[in-house]
Length: 237
Image (cartoon, rainbow, N blue to C red; front, side, top):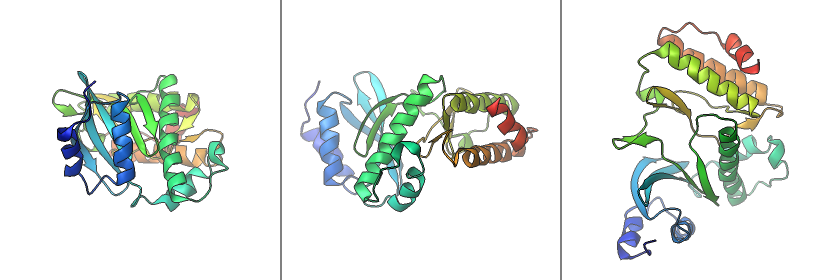
């Protein structure tokens, strides 16, 4: 595997405003462990997280990096403390952010094991996730909000089935919308799983209804006849 050389270090410096020293050290560590060879291009730069493509041999992967200084860790804490898996978590910025990234990794693994169409999680280190790249040689698969399906009704039925498989796997996404579903070759791929919660959580049903409402609202705009209550009933069946 290529060693971290001057060229690679300069690439990190290009993004000095989004990589703090702690994150940069751990990016070097992941690189030295062979999880990627070289930093690629930014997919999105945000207040909460930055997403980059990386090269690993002949494969493209994705880095999702939660920002340690600008993340709303209080909001994260309010979400995560209601998850039965994290009841002992303390309200400390780094502890919450690291748990948030780990939670997304665990949720993606669980979803993947349940046959849900999601990016394969490869590893997690503190606030950094390495994920499967969803797309092709032309770039990352577009979010549903940016690419209306050619057949919205068929896409809706596929998406509803993915939500059902996720529920059977023991999770509710909790933030489904046109922002968190990819349109990959006219098939849905669910992303952004940090807020997903186990079905035995006391807020799971609230999350499921919210997902149903958001999905139905979007597809109704595209002429698909759908009802949030019927959506929920199907997912639970």
